[in-house]
Length: 70
Image (cartoon, rainbow, N blue to C red):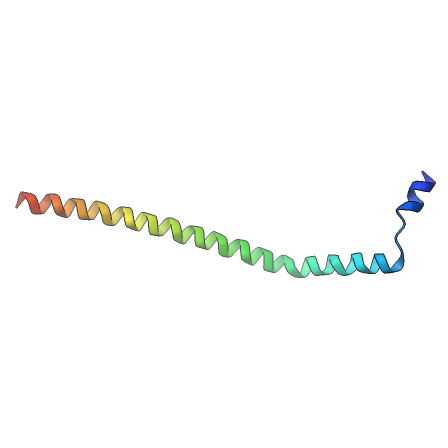
């Protein structure tokens, strides 16, 4: 077990690099959350456009039916 812990010991340079990597990930976290929110908004817009197209097609069909009865 002692040999194993000695193997996993990090040098000061490796510890500094690990700390810098962790800080970088924490700085990028808000950006990642923002990207996820933007993707969600894009999905929502896509859904709304599909719903709008569906409503327009139904409106067109109703108009066609009403015109044929006049």
